Image (cartoon, rainbow, N blue to C red; front, side, top):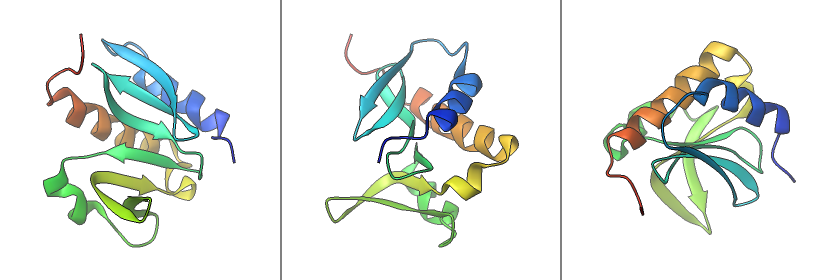
Length: 112
């Protein structure tokens, strides 16, 4: 399944104007990177992949629309999968995207 292009466009609108922003196809989805670090992606499985502070990730999981991201059978600490239903509302989408961008901004830039 390809990523949701409408969702990607909505993410693009939220991150418009961010410094050091780039887009890259990754894991079958479309990732939005800030300073070379992936902040959020329109997932090929639907919904979002969002980078968060690993210390906060368990508290953000709700077992319904927000779950830990699992890749190749391993839970990826500091990454959440947010279901498409949980970001249908523009305010909810913006909140998750801004959370991912803010966390990545707290990290050193990657590459150069």
